[in-house]
Length: 64
Image 1 (cartoon, rainbow, N blue to C red):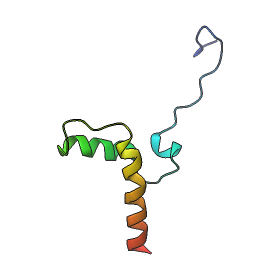
Image 2: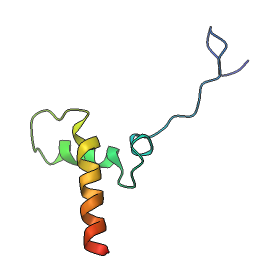
Image 3: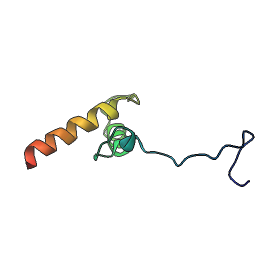
Image 4: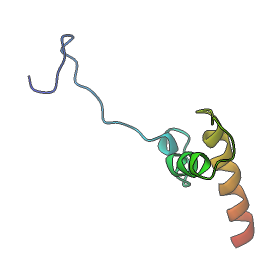
């Protein structure tokens, strides 16, 4: 019964935000870079999820 809580259900493996959005660009890295480069005092959780597909689209347009 290792790894189970009180409910007895087995926890599924964690899914990255990039995998949830079906993206190749890592959402976590975009979020980290937005916070590090001081674009704004606060960066919302949805910002990198919307920005990552834009970056992915633009890189696909450049390289194709």
